[in-house]
Image (cartoon, rainbow, N blue to C red):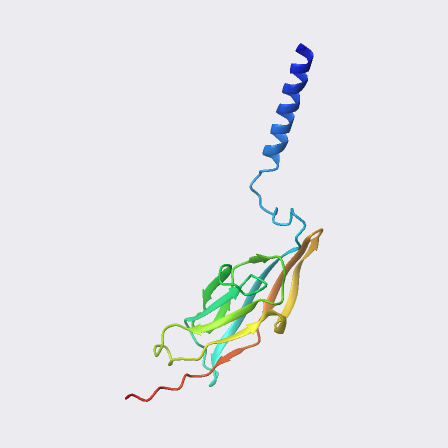
Length: 156
């Protein structure tokens, strides 16, 4: 009986150590249930139709395959009209869209119409090879996005 308790305690201790070792906090476990995962980043430039860089344009990069609002990265264009998203992860790639919105209205050159572009329409460059369910790391470069001005509504 004493031997049985000893074996049980050793097994319990070993399983505890193995369990804690699996919780190292280093991440990368997103694919543990057999879902392919890919890391990606999006960059590009936003101009007016007159080729003037547009600063402060909100750029929303959706990570969900169905372009749901719940998983998105929001960045803003700089003075040169350039943007660069954070590194994102998703289980399926290419169907996501990037949305461009003028949030400051008439400031900084006028009010511009919103636009969007799908990742599949962008240049794709693989930065890191994947292994197993991890498909690797990619960088998407949007073609130059040109936003047209919104027509002013006549005042009544």
